[in-house]
Image: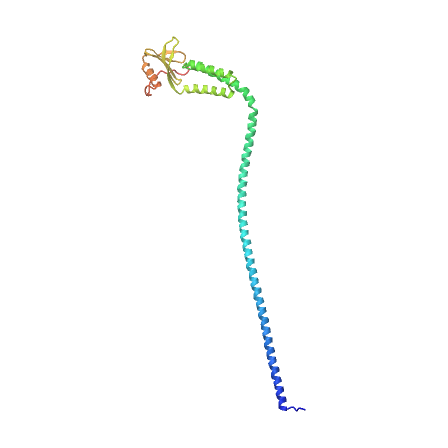
Length: 265
């Protein structure tokens, strides 16, 4: 049987106490480490959440910027479309006015076409009257190139009777004859011709205000007074000879004094 030493018993109790204190300290250290580790994990989680939120914010801002740019482009395109539409509206309005005028012209043409038959019925009598009036004028006019001018009248009548000549062509040659007669009044011209007695003389026409002839030897000079030949030899022999030379382009034009018949005489 063993006996316990009081001192030894006291020592065992102290040892047990130190072991208990050490265990408590270790437990406290372990508990603090556990708490710190938990805090670190929580802090890391918060940081991760903040970083993720920042990434989402950046992505959202990029999306917003993209939407804003697209919106700006669409707005620019919209303004361009509005401007184009305004131009098209103005163009269409102008074209509508043109179309309206064209439709009016078409109606006028239709009306004119409907009158063609009536015009064709009236044009032939009109041309015949024009030919007759021109012939009457020539017969009453100064008798220069009389045969040539009356032959032209006959050619007009032949054209009117020719079935191969169209109405427009007939009308054209009638107008040409009128133009030729008008031109006679604006020019002066010399030519050789025969008198009724067969003599060949030099005729010279000064528009329609003066008509003269002179024999080849210049011994006889006469002027047309509106109804007959009047002898003007002597005083006007030289002026008439000069007028003939000017009309033949054999001398330069110059001022000369000539007898002129007053209208109506």
